[in-house]
Length: 112
Image (cartoon, rainbow, N blue to C red; front, side, top):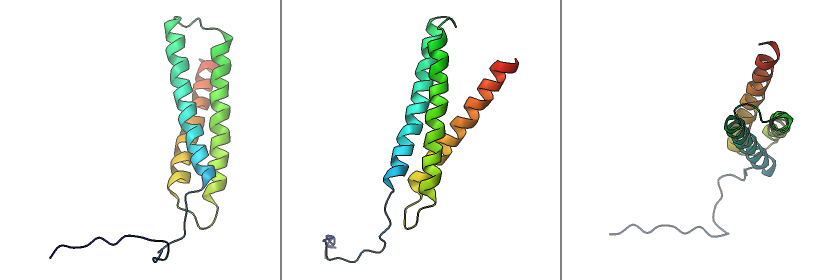
């Protein structure tokens, strides 16, 4: 006897009403954008043999600010009630590690 798969309809039982917060998804996109932009800036700087100018430096500061805003949004969305913690956790990790990396890179360039 073949097992029939149950089709979910609107009247079926929902075990949870937790949802992915839109702000956390936006923060994840910001984190991925920040890392992608940083990689693009590094490639552009290496193509110009380290003489890319102030625009690349300001782009790095922009990456830092994007990650900082993304981390703040992720932190706020992590403390909401009745949510799934997947995207807030992912975006907190991506943006938090990016902020720490950018700060260490800045300090290395400043004092080295």
